Length: 111
Image (cartoon, rainbow, N blue to C red; front, side, top):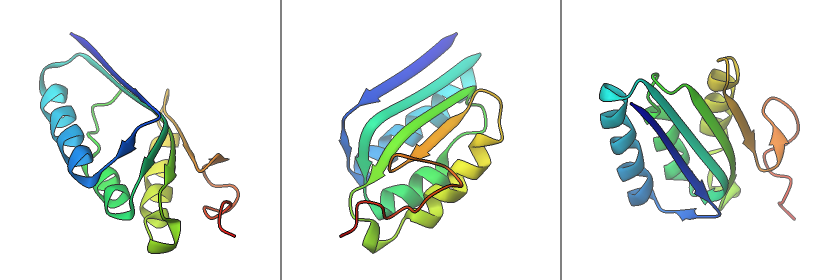
């Protein structure tokens, strides 16, 4: 079984991310290949922590182009950790706030 989940341009609430990661964990148990693509999505600081902690190891492809909805409230460190972990895996690509992971500031949009 192959499962690919693509979300584009969504404002993901903490509750929505919790449901998403729970579903991914359940799918990882039965799917042969599992892909997650979030493009242009915005998440809050708590959601960033949740996403970083709950991402299943079974994912074959993790492609995130996401932005923190309020970077001043935190979450950047969790996303940076997620990026470093997943960018080292083949087929995974994580970009935060329009920057490549490991380069640039997480607060480029801050005035």
